Image 1 (spheres, helix red, strand yellow):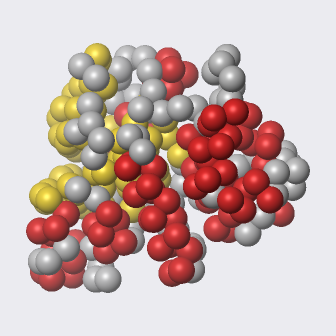
Image 2 (tube, one colour):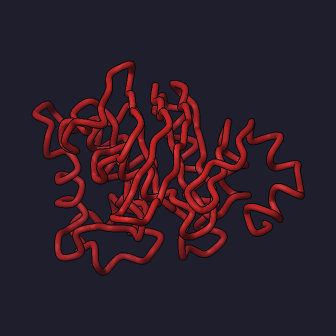
Length: 233
């Protein structure tokens, strides 16, 4: 569904991502793991058109997309849920969800049912300002807003950052449910163990380079991988 071929991303003289290649198969959950500064977010931003690439190619459903504008990529069904729980804080929960669907013209009632089944607390807080929500609720809203764009492939950037362990489990459970309902997931995470428990395949980045890849069930059993590249559990 998504293919990244030898992609390099630079910021002036700084190389953030160096010749990275990866694949995301339809209906899978693929994780990109690594510490802060490993290039994970830079790679996601390149895929969705927020960063230009210095070299390489990015293909989505067989079409090259690295020369397209971000809004054109979203129209094709590739949607990013950014890090830091970025919601419109002065807007209500409902207004945030409608903002996620701004490119769509069809009836949204089924989409609202979908996100409220995943995150019932959002329905309870529909008229509440997003800035007054808890950290976990803001993360739920950020994911729900991305889902309102009706993605074929949903990219999630650090959805567990700063959340208590019980909320991390809740968010990961929701991500797995989203995938089981037919949406392909590309998950960027520092919480490697949590991501590997739900992902089918994983890539590990270190200082912008791909250092390891493999089925998640294999990587999660390799203690040397966890300790060397992912900082333990």
